[in-house]
Length: 592
Image (tube, rainbow, N blue to C red):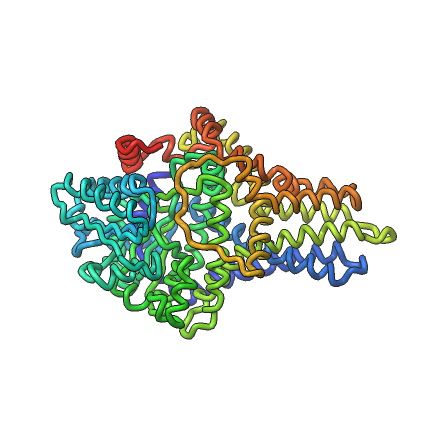
């Protein structure tokens, strides 16, 4: 089954759907999501109706609907992806015309670019060296040139970058394939860096493969992307499915394990209905340089100020501009050989998430930009809605406690209906993970260490999710409250290796979450003790936020889980060549 699936994915062809076929798919999904969400909200309305608190009831229903809409969308997209992965014929998913993906020669030269800014030099060089070694192993290495695009601002770090890059360059038979390029004035940060490259040395290339500072890609995957782009001139951006690898902390391990179970089915389902306007996440993708240079300059939107405003989430805007110019933004479903890292701690994850939240909410000002297709507007709204769903659910929980405390004694609360709605919502939320678990078993649980370890990992993931999600919800809510008073998330280099997290640091970062949890807990005990059991799954994470952050930042706990094979990634059980090469580079550099 696995080999058959690989051969089908390898025959990917970007032949467009007919407009009617794609519109029908989107209509089907839209109707399913709308009917299910409205049904859940109507069900909730029937439960709270008649208590006499009309305004409070309305807030409860509206905030619930905002979170439920995203949960239902993920549920249906993942379910569609699961069905497609199990199908014996995937003709409806653009896997057509095998001749288009025959091993045709790569005609032009391709740039592999890695923008960096004040990053750990040994770490990103290990990633870039691993990618190059893997590409060289395909026999097509002579068609690729590599550019390290530095925006680093610290003089001592710039010197190290130059020295170590030149030392690597000196070991190569063809040193001209490697170029270090640094901008003196890093305007526009990463997006501006890429644009400057495209307007300069990038003009000599048709495509560029964009890497992040912790990205690694298999040579076979990069060559496959290049051949698809070469055969399909309509595609402006082709994105790979990205997996996270070699977690160095318990948090990264647990987050990626659960994420992996959902991710591949969700991406496959999304490709089914998004078609030619898929997601662009800014790296581990191949981009048509001429189109990118001509149409994706952020400063051309509404002036130079827009470029500064949108730089933190430039990828969403670039995908929109590429599609507006008539090019397709596609995603290669279920692709392998595309990797990145994860924030090592809960705190670092929340910092990154808040930065994304701010950037994507700011991007909403572009909704009425002329020439946008409906899917472009969907991506702007959909990503922003994903971030708003967490504070919406926080408000829902707070209002639900008020509702429980003030429920009229003469009105009978429909306990059985409420419990059934509760169970239904949790089922919709967790079913994508269960489908991923079933898929992992079907594809071979040995990839995750065997059936027993996979089952234990799933139980650990369930507990992790129950603690992590409420913390993230309340932290995001607190960030948005601060933003109303002028606080802004700044772009800073993301720590990519495990760091010690002290109790003081954890408490300083998570005290608002803990205080909110304590306040909610005390309020329920004093006013509606009987409903405490309903709120415990939400309260547990808040009350234990600090020890949870400490435990999940632990290197020792992660080492034990690795030794026992718990929550293992397939790449950890059977490392592919490029990741083995990465480990050799890390040992050479003395990296942890």
